[in-house]
Image 1 (cartoon, rainbow, N blue to C red):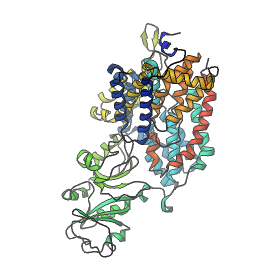
Image 2 (spheres, one colour):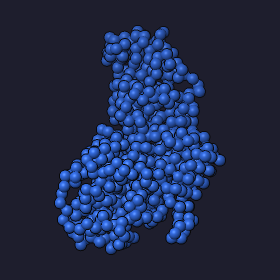
Image 3 (tube, rainbow, N blue to C red):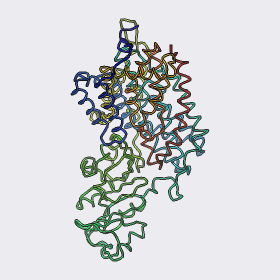
Image 4 (cartoon, rainbow, N blue to C red):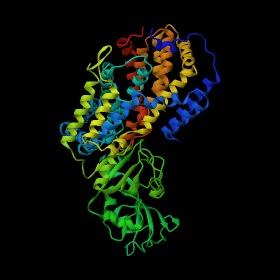
Length: 614
């Protein structure tokens, strides 16, 4: 047996040490912090590394070795390539073609959207695939008079399932394969998991068509069309000199004729609640709530301005006809999360003014600039055409409705697709000479080359290429790889493997694999899929080695288990559809639990057949 597996073969009873206790304690703390999101995942990861180095469990070289592995390079390159495909309009073009062939049948739409999304997600980050289709699906729902809640959750689920079709379908697959390759345990080829991925996609779509679709809530607000225009936004209105509002009673203003509700009046440093005696004065800032179409009417009224996050003297500049309005969804990757518009200095940084904020199921009473932005919030913003376009490259910000669609650049779009296709081809066919004959080009090298070509040919600017990369996910994967090393150094992985083998029985490798499979699914609820897989993987490999079972089979099981968990909305793809689909936490539990259970059973039956346990 390969010497690379020797660390996995330490048999016998292992005594529990304080280093093991510290490692497990840090793991528990990481799970809690990931779940509560009190701190950003990258901050948590760096804190873990500092503690591990400070305690002597890891050397500094071991702590930061993960930042140079192939998985991190490959993932960063995929972010750049996906960004190039988006900025050149290729993704929007694909979405438009889908709309033309879909029709208005809910059943046909569900099948078509899930199938196409899964196929696209096979060669693209699943979060990007979800973000790409959200605007098209929302527009389609409005035209077909179908609630967005009927299609957006299946869209997110399909993108996650489609990621199991190839090695580059998700960051989890790349992270797991990189871990195995770095430790010279095994290589997983580009399409090795495709047969299992096809079963996941087929079974998943069949479940959603036959069972899941009937559990999806038909959630429409006020019995209206499921379009975004029915959202009640919080906005600020500044009362200017000569405004007809001056002297009007706060309960009987002209704004009430536009179905606006005044929630609060801010006068200098004081705040007042509207009542029948309070009169509006010049310079007042009115915190109001109303629909998008009503907000646009207010912008045309004389004597008032939407204050947003600008100074009073700048407000009039927002009336320019060259400006346009867009609705933007805040995702988990956005720098806005947990911060206010003032802290970010959003207007100065992005050249766009936030006119209003919407948070599904919550009433906002703070001024816009003082409102802490959360994942799933919707921002109604206005800015120059070019600056709004630039927001499409901002991590964690997704334009859902826009008066201007992105421009398709045929030549650059063709280049981006060609470079991506070439990278996939070179990483799958033997074309590189080596001591062992001809081998495929390493995936990280092929993808990095494609990413560089998109920059060199002008498909994407170099500064935008860096912005496309989700650095927090890069840090998370690199850091959790180091955490796996810590579990090896302290024998924690061996100890846990021993406990699980003792409980499940050393003579029943299928039961042990099933235990790790379920453990991975459980951990993906509070943690990212990639982090959960990298935490469980070394433990599972230890258990497999102790029983003489196939490490390959166990590794594939952990990889797939991390990609079939749909019980909570913490997966980034699910977060993206949470607000526009008007979902609630229990909606995911109700629909996703059954889907997760069905796919888990299918995989626990299929994996030993495709990758024998012995």
